[in-house]
Amino acid sequence: MKLMIQKLKKYLNFKITETNSLYPFIFTLFFVFLTFQYPFSTLESIFYDFRVRYDLGSSTKNQIVVITMDEESDEFLGEQYPYTYASHYRLFSKFLNEQPKIINYLLNPLGPESEMDGKNFIKFKKAIKSYKSTGGYFRFGVKMDVWGEQYPPIGLKEFGYSLAVLNRDDLEFSKDKVVRRAILNISGDDILHMWTANKFRKFLGKNKLESHNLKGAFYQRDLDATVVSFRYSSSPMEKDKQIVKIPFHKVVVGNFPKGFFKDKIVIVGPSYISNSGDYSFTPFDRESLKAPNIFLHGLIIQSLVENKTVIPISKTFTYIFSLLIVLFLSIFINKAQPTSGLIITISLMCGILLFSFCIFSIFGYWLYTTHLIMSIFIVYYIWVPFRAIAEYKTRFAIQEEAKLIKEVESLKQNFISLMSHDLKTPVAKISGMVDIIMMQVRGQTEIENNLNMVMDSTKELNNFITSILDLTKIESSKLNLQKTSKDVNQIVSSVVEGFMFEAERKEIKLNMELSPLYPIKIDVGLFRRIASNLVENAIKYSGKGKVVDIKTWDDEKWVYIEVIDNGVGIGKNDIKRVFDRFYRVKNDASHSIKGTGLGLYLVKYFVELHGGKISVESELGRGTRFKVQLLNV
Image 1 (spheres, rainbow, N blue to C red):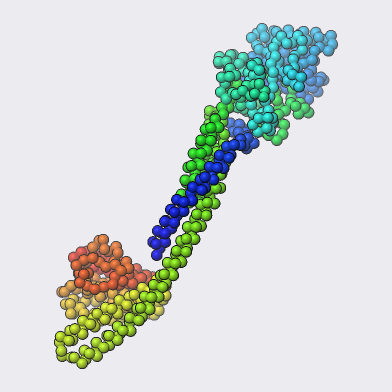
Image 2: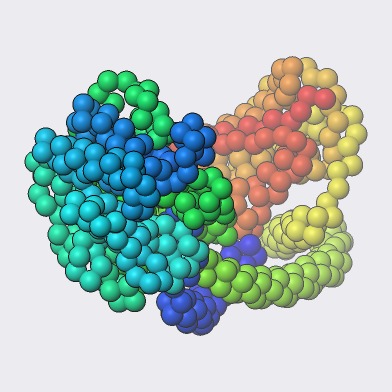
């Protein structure tokens, strides 16, 4: 019955899989292709910013020093932004001794407002010229407002100026005003970051960067600019203190160690806490303005100096990769157990996130992750319900079939039971009539022999009916033990005595070696059946002139009953199945000896019902040994 249910389950599962797997696959492809139509930039920006924050491959030697003009310097100098030319001259006079490589002025000073300021203005210009004459580079970084590009005052333009603007994601990508990209040039003119990076790369002996050749750079039409996503070499947050920073007034008074600016890029600019325009959103904090713009200018320059930019991987690759994931995961979830499907789904998501993080940190490649993750979710959340429905159908079909098989089995058992009971009555009548006739024809040898054959046949038929009834009770779980305390030796002796006539007729000697035993609790009727079957089989298969030994003994745990014959024996292939239902050993003796194949099956069941064990050892031509172990209680 179990085998039939397993075969049915396998068949139904194959059919359901064959016919229904196409539907969830089509649904999956439809929804995955639907996701390809939408960029999911907000979600992708979360994955991108995570990689930026924990980028292990962008940390480099800090080559930039930031000089901040802030509330602290205002109070110390007694001036207001953008300070007098006297303060700027004093600042430059300190630079001349320190010899920084590049100075970027990210402010737009006003023209001289007094005669004294005019004199300091001239001194400031001379200080810049003096600094440049020593091999240093100086450049103003100017902003762009609604009226266009701002310029330095007349008299300072000659030192050069470039736009110094930050590209915030206002209209592109996630539209959250976070600084992720750097502008390289506008309308073909390099901005301050590119100009500074190339000057410093020249100093380091590196090749000049060209905007159109830079990895990851692309043209942004609405800005008429070439932009690139840059990698943060460190956190731009003031609280993290990873950017080398010094207030303006400390430099003016010379409060810094010797060599502090030597061969560095120095950026001078405002960083007022009270002015939100001096701060920006970054991947390190998308909710509040805590990253000074002057820090971001420095990090962009650092990224370009090291040529560490972000290279987006084509979305076509992401789409193809997504479809491969859909194919693989669909097959796996359809075939695997639900727990295994969940584990592989989570593992695949984690693996993709880890892979995208590694290629970003090591190579700077940006893999669009959102579509991959969403494809995994879509596969899982479409296939699992379909799989559940298919399994429910399979389970329901199996339950219905099992119910039907159980009903058929019950009908079969009832039929066999009724037939067996009905057969017992005529068999008993036949046996009784034979006994009467034998008394009437006593002395008539031929008739007596024929009647003996009829009597033997009725006994065999009666034994067969009894075995069938026992089998029916076993399969219906209606066989109950009626245990009483009894001496095993008495039952064994009684059984052996019952087979003495049969053994003498076949010239077989029955030897009993019964050790003294304490009474144990057994079902006397069933134990008698056990002993009778083993002794009867030994007599049947021994042959003329053989010996059958019946032994009993015990130890602390078990009572042992052993029946040994030196008959034909059992082969290795048959010995594994001697206790199977309806199985008979295939040899020459079995063809002439009648049997049902149920005897040893019932013996094993009766022994195990007592909590005991039965084992068999045999060798062809040498005989067979059966050993029964019953609990010594």
